[in-house]
Length: 67
Image (cartoon, rainbow, N blue to C red; front, side, top):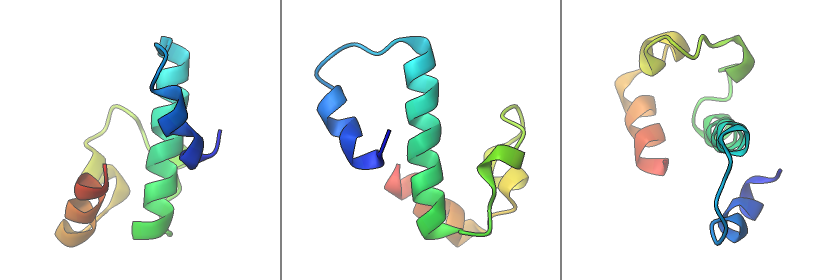
C-alpha cells in the first residue's frame, strides 16, 4: 500500500497484520528519504533500530521526527 494511502485508512480499525505491514511500509518510505542505503528487509526486527540500521545520530533524529 502506498504511503499516502495510510491516512485514509485511519478511520477504521487495523488488524495486527495490517499494522505490521503498514508500519513497515511507512518506515521503508521514510528511510528511503533519510538513509537510502538502509535495506529494511535485512534488519533484525528485534535489534535496536539505530544500531541495526547503522544510523548516525542526525539520521536517527530525522527518522524519529518524521515518524
